[in-house]
Image 1 (cartoon, rainbow, N blue to C red):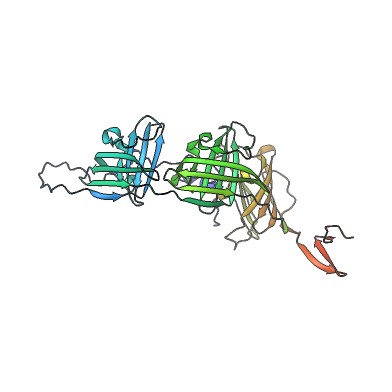
Image 2: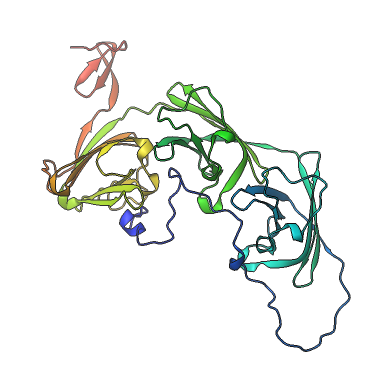
Length: 429
């Protein structure tokens, strides 16, 4: 099987998560109390045991700290971690104002169901006592905490904020889509390792204003986050996004500070698409075409086609709530979009640009005409026929559009297809 999942297969996988270009609410680290599993179970016996002298607290130096306010619960969720394990403090204040410096919060101020120690919720140990004191540090908020676990172990935790270092990220892909139901523009900037999402509320389908800086106050925080997927998302404590007029489209510059303290400066520069060096025309008959209409359930529609004799195979998936329509690269869901040249091609040809027109006919028939510009600079002009629609081409046709320079009569002649041009671009008869 090729590397691309079809939507039909994905529908059978309950845990499938849709990423990059779809809006998805992040899953927060704050985990419900009933998901925690105590490491040491309480004893139901009445037998007496010898009690060892109380041990000194273990010193724990946290290397990272995050603080996030949850308006739905009215609490600040603080995590102090060393990268392997950590302490969580769910301080109820019913105020979005940051925790008070030099004030000591005790377990009585916390929701104990969300306050615990461990590497994850499945290996958590509750507190029998806890204090947390935020302090004004030289480079941010420092913390000092003391906890006693229900298993009797005590810890003294310290965290000292270090100077912020800005990570430079040059995004290689940018997408922007307007969601009419929410009145917001959803912008994603990403490279091979990072993805930053900005959900900007404008209540206007007009594209974002060039040269204007949008801040976190203009965004929906629940849809604005950093991470490869929603299950490993990190929220922003501050964010700025500025769309700019670029030479080949819209450029972007952004600055974000994550709740874990990391700071990023992101830039994206639009680049012109290459001219295709070759055109390949493919028409898939109804017998060779499949359509998965998940527009109502998942907001996705996928056309796929397979030439059994050659193994030429294509999948194109659009983010849409209906099948018919006009689509551009901004509407393409890349995870479920791919093109394979033959039966031995398992790497596929990445798409640089896609435009498509999907027309609906009677009895649920559709024709999808797709221009797929591959990273190999070949333009694949594909037609998917689904249902009772006429087809005329059943084979692959290749139309060469390569440009060749040659010398004729001592002059440089540029040959493109059947036409010849001089160096000034003028046609030569």
